Amino acid sequence: MFGWLGWQGFMAPFDKFHDECGVFGIYGHDSASAHAALGLHALQHRGQEGAGIVSYDGKQFYNERSLGLVGDHFNDEKIIAQLKGRSAIGHVRYATTGGTTLRNVQPLFAEFDFGGLAIAHNGNLTNATALKRELVGRGAIFQSTTDTESIIHLIATAREPRSMVPPATADPSTVLRIIEALKQVIGTYSLVALTQHFLLGARDPYGVRPLVLGKLDGALILASETCALDILGATFVRDIEPGEIVIIDQNGLKSLKPFLAVPSKFCVFEYVYFARPDSQVEGTNVYHTRQRIGAELAREQPADADVIVPVPDSGTPAAIGFAQAAGIPFELGIIRNHYVGRTFIEPAAQIRHLGVKLKHNANRATLEGKRVVLVDDSIVRGTTSIKIVDMVRNAGAKEVHMRVASPPTTNSCFYGVDTPKRSDLLASSRSIEQMRQHIGVDSLAFISLDGLYRATGLPGRDAKQPQFCDACFSSEYPIQLTDFNSGTEPSQLSLLAERG
Ligand code: SF4
Image 1 (cartoon, helix red, strand yellow):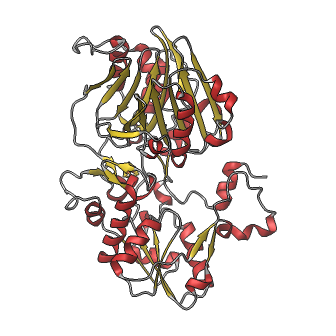
Image 2: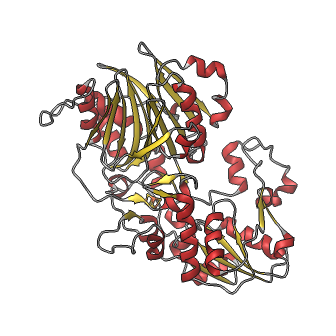
Image 3: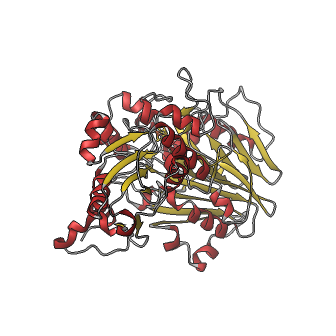
């Protein structure tokens, strides 16, 4: 029997980038934990390995964490009832190799001299290994392998910076210690933290990962994406700004900007794939942005064809945009089985060749005798693309062309995304013509980086100062890769310090 990870490996060995986490926080609501569970359910696409909620009722903290999906564990009224209090934070986490253990499921909780603190983090600290070595050298004992735990140890040893005026918030001393700890980390974080006095939200100075503020019945909410607000009927207030720390306490919200200002570098892949299409990201609806990416792709890389077919589900909005711009009919030529999941019992060895067909099936009625353009959001390893193309040809397509709604993915991500080694990325070592032959399509083309920027509403990519992080396409990493540059490979990093 395969375990869950084994089953994923059998299905499609990691052929997408995967965002690794989603965070949620709520302060001042009678149903704080129930809302946290619902919010995490809406953020499930950001992480499926484990989920956790920590709440506080004015006297003590309550902590519940579990492996698996939010709905597998937090659908139990008794569990929600045990998570007492009017404030709570939660986390969903994506599975990384070698790390499917409960001890890595967040929020992490620790007792300090100032009381308890729970923390949930989306992102990746690029100096996590260096920090961990230093902290362990100073006597720290780590209980998890997540990079987030380094922040906890840094808070424990931080002293209030004398240069900073204490903020007008509840427990300013603890706020200052958290700021002091965050000043020592390099990398990406959108995090929420809960103490007995406040809910804190923080976004790294580059603002690589998203974090939004919402409001419900007078309570304030922090979440990775607006879809977590929509499920609750909460109002979207604004994005938390890059480098901003918000403290939410009984007096309302206080915003701090304690870091040196740097140009923001939001992850452009959030628009391409990670964020849910119904979310508002950095002021833009993700679905509409994906449609515009498809339209831009059609203008840049037209194809003579009879039908435009999305690779579901992530290629669908771009395929709609492509079809509209090209004036070619959009058809659902591939149907996805939504019920293939972690509870599926793997078939016997003799029928394992079913492979990708368990998840996708070609719709022969829309493909036979047609010149087909397949639109996908990205090509990572290319393993799924080969199988999809094969399936479409077997369904009788006359020609199969592929158009990709992101530039060739040539580099790994170190900023909070589960990513294969660079050498496993199809585009890292092959020309587009070599990729075309490998995948087996009649033509293959990608949107340009400039075109991707235009689809987000910008005039193009500023070559001197790119407006987004686009390192997995451009190899221009905007944030220092301390651990990697010291010679530690990403696979080793994940064992030493997993990403939050
Ligand atoms: Fe996003 Fe940058 Fe990571 Fe690519 S390298 S996935 S653009 S954060």
